Length: 301
Length: 159
Ligand code: SF4
Image 1: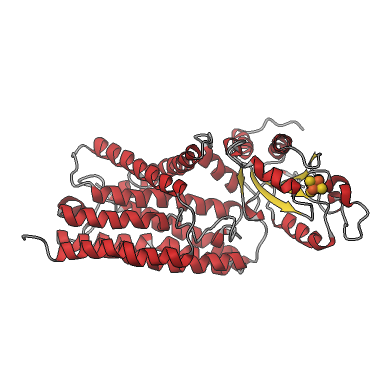
Image 2 (image 1 turned 90 degrees about the horizontal axis):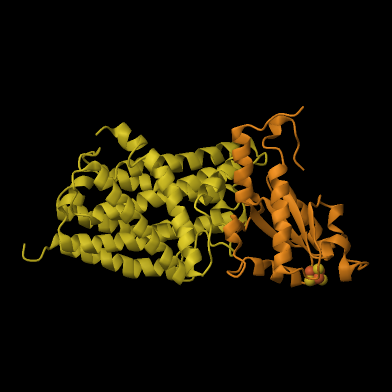
């Protein structure tokens, strides 16, 4: 299947856009139901986006303006690119070393967020940026270790081969470690330290307004699709071969991941930066180390 | 000239009405109004049904909810925050303080009423007003927000 199809249709733009909004809605709705509220209507993320894009942002110095346009767009493009590489359909577009490319692309958005925070020159933005940087490093340790374990266990750097051929024990541990990294990568409770609302306002996003914030929210929606999709596509050891069925299973399981994450977010309160990063260094990395050990020294084999 | 609004304009207005984000500012009130305002956001009233979200930054907000009589200390912050809110924006004055100074009237540290500094669109009287009343004020504010021009290029002005 061509790379253009993957980028623009599935699992790229045409799929990711409505799916990202649906995921944002599922997250907010689940949270609302857990707090015995009714919650936002189904179209909420779409309306938020339209409203943000049509607000009149305040004039800014042109240099700053350029960065505020460039960074969210770069993040959005990189996240979409990462999404393109997901091994969903059996004959989907893939490259030999696409695991490395995926990691590189998915990490661009957090870097952009850190830069945005520092550029804003607001104290809240800078505190948010520092927290984001600390936590990105903390969560990437288990995240990348788990992916290395998977790559080694299946003997390939191609995401499709990893998804189809990783041995079950290493796969289970690594997928658990990756799942544990999602709340921090999506900035959810109990690890919503970087965007801690009420505490440092919106962290790095405090000074974004109008379409700048709209573009960032769009990127966030696509991030949801990419990261939940990564977990699902690596956890599933088989593909039916029927594109429509595979896509439907992928979409449903991604939504289930979103639901689980929202339940976790609703049931917990925010940790401190130190606690959150300690959690990842200790427990997240523990899982990843186990996965590494299992894949380097396979039992009986 | 009476022009029929285009589909795009109607969509924008509808989206705006379904997604009003609030910013809350106390300009020296006694905190009574703030408690009632925050009660609106609790599960009992659940304003998220209307698409309302409380934002931490005025740059994200559509509706400014202001309580308190405006004191010397808060006046500069009020004006900065009003200027930081991107158009179209609506101001809701919560409680009797921003309207008249209420119990703080004639105090040497009070420079209000609010009208002296920013244009006010909706007044919610009461000391403090009930959350239902505040919600009604916000719903009026949403109507005003929807009626504002869609793009300033049309020749209309925000304010
Ligand atoms: S209106 Fe009444 S309750 Fe509200 S801030 Fe003023 S004095 Fe307090």
